[in-house]
Length: 140
Ligand code: 5GP
Ligand code: ZN
Image (cartoon, rainbow, N blue to C red; front, side):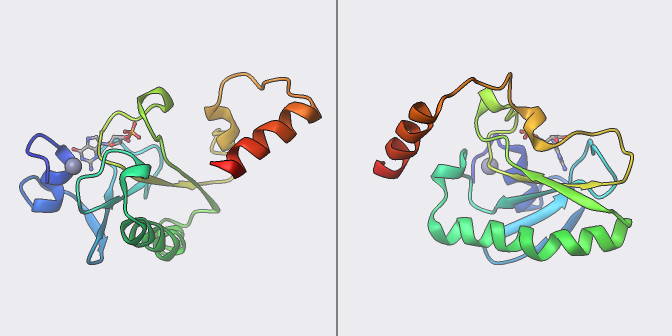
């Protein structure tokens, strides 16, 4: 628990949240400024800033809850699809420094784009560069 973290305050019940599901290690609640009806945030109950800070167990708890909840959200708001994503770090748009997965219901003709729209311009990478990147990642 971090004293000045808004999501820790929701976990602790100190500020209200529209909680939709809870497990031992994860909590899901509606986004206060939703991009769509049913826009839900799924978080580890423990204060963890970035995805890499989660233990394997915490990560499983969060993503299991995302997997369990997404179809239920779709059913509840009659959504056609979802965009599911994480702004993992401030440079990626993370504003609340407590890791969270966005589950955004999507609707035919809603005017939104694919998750690719989150990245900047597409880099021009040739086959050799792609091979090198894949090898570097595999070696980490
Ligand atoms: P981020 O940019 O960090 O990925 O997204 C943070 C999300 O948290 C935003 O979509 C924002 O609307 C939501 N949010 C910020 N403060 C609160 C709050 O106090 N309660 C809830 N339920 N959502 C919040
Ligand atoms: Zn926190």
